[in-house]
Image 1 (cartoon, rainbow, N blue to C red):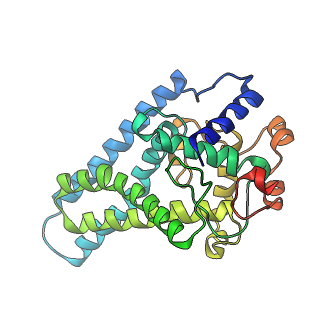
Image 2 (cartoon, rainbow, N blue to C red):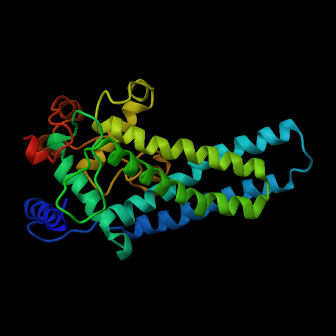
Image 3 (cartoon, one colour):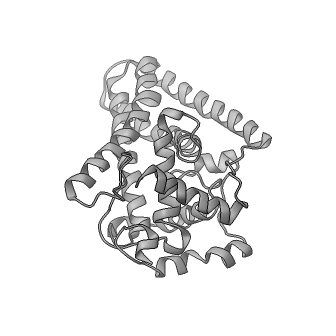
Length: 278
């Protein structure tokens, strides 16, 4: 999708919902306090856990198993606030200009491809590129595979920078580091697979049958209705701690956008822009 087309979508959205004025997502003073407080708490708990691993002496199976398990377990705990901050300040506001194309493409995801009136589609994934050209999405198998790998690498890069590196510096424990890497692989893959499953029902049957899927499905639909809330996609701990968690739509939102059940019934197209499918 071209930059001009994306801007057209943005302007139309602003005209319809904000009387023509751009409305960036606001972070209130209460949110700022919660953001700082809980981020510090999460970091301190994580550093304390890593420091404890560094005191574990000797080599034994129970010790190695414990270090590996802790490495895996700490990933979702740390990944949740990282996911929140990236989604909020990269995907929904171009705070870092070098990453502004991600903001533009993610805006297109919300309003050009998956607005609430066409929340789900059929067919295999047709992913958006970061290139500024006339193509709307990638339709070839290899093109989609390349973008999927790029997404996976993007998520893993945050793990390497904010989790693996500090974990290794503090613990110098290869088993603990292996746990961090294994946990990052699982979480990074789930980011992609669960999101695909939500917008393309039937694409991953095993994911859809998990007991937690319905919660995340509803959680993400509310985010598409109210962009400043439910900013966690996969790990809503930070939403809970930062005050952006919502579990229900208001009566007005239901009248305007409809329920998730209705949205899931209105499947159309195979991944093309919503106005084309309509």
